[in-house]
Image: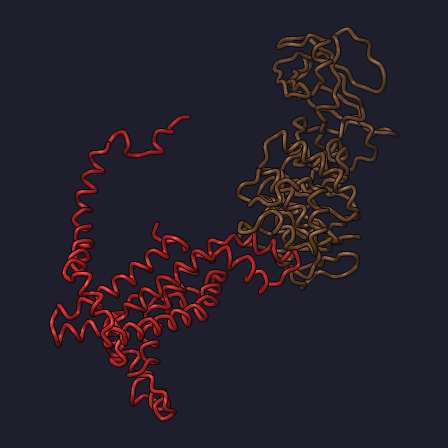
Length: 350
Length: 270
């Protein structure tokens, strides 16, 4: 199956959406963006709830334009599940499924067999979403759309369901569009991520591309990269360029930079910290720096490091093992190493 | 949590004294409602009431009222629900106009409603004369009673059901349709059941209004006599005491409607 959007646009009172071009194969495309960016509009257009003013949407070559919601064979899971409140979980699934066997199979697959005879209001948030998924899968959709299905769940349940969804999506073998405003969920579930901003798709790429090679300052910052700096291209070499940020020069491996002014982004997880006197090797730039603030974020530490030779503050993520090995605290002197590959220049837009 | 005490205004600062004052003031109204009802039922001993309840005149008027109110309610529901659904799911300048027309009978004095209906359905009007010629007069007939009751009572169905439909999250309808069910199946199996208690409230209110209808019925169909008309006639011809049995019966039916509202339907006023 292939979902293809070509030049799709729509407009509300104060909001222009599109034009959006997008191709989704049998994969999970995480649609990531802030609230109000147009993520839900994108799903509504594909599902037939909203009508495009221009462009075309095709599913496996078949045009969906003008087709009613019920004739599209597009499954949609809504934010709170949208279970029918006057039906039990079983009746909700049976509403879409043909036969009791099918209900039982789906209930078993989504692990909701025990709660089938309960009404939606007595189900937990996680159970509701499982039932909603079972109900949607009962129609054998050719395409699955999910609108922030985990956003109202508590962290442990969300994490568990997220892992299960990953496996489920893999077994489906249809295009899946998963809308979220949480970059962790997008990174965990998406084979690719589409960043939506102001009614347009800003970048589509693998999670690692999105994180380390953002196409704009917005993408960098929305995915948690605070290290974006104005930089001047001072020299172009065969296999890269030299960038100047403030008083410091960095090497980058990006060749053929078209502009002389760029925004240089350095992902916080792609910066090394070491003892001040540690040997430096490889294609890196090394500076002395001082830790000015640190925050424990569970799986990692997020530090602010001021460079001694320039008025530049970097955000650096380090693993707890590194944090403990270097006995870091506020005021610690460190050696900051920035690999050439970590410097990602974005040409400034005219 | 800062400011959480402000979530319960009045409980600590004004205290229960103010509540007592409120109840005392409201109590005056409460007496106005309850006393006449109690007096009505005390004025006739239960034995007398039961003895006079099978008076042919009482039976005839009760039959007319129950039959006409049932048919009026049915008509109001069959024609009112689609209109209510349309009103709930469209938002255009036309919607506002249509809603204003629907509400008109609610604010119109019933006697004026009767006059308005007479100009369209009464003798001398094109429609009225055609109906009489066809042997199906629209005044002084059961049809006239039903016409008057439907005019006055059906807005209750439309207005209440509109609110009930509006309270049904549209996402549920989208969900149903994304599961391959068409608009009609969705309306029948999702929207109607979810809005059900609210709709039932509207239907009950319409029935209560129809069975108590007097003004428009008087103008349009003095015969066959409904209970309110019979009460009026008995009062004029034979005095207050002769109006009691039918009045009590009507009060009991009204109380029954209230019970329905509180049990199976979603009472829109609680």
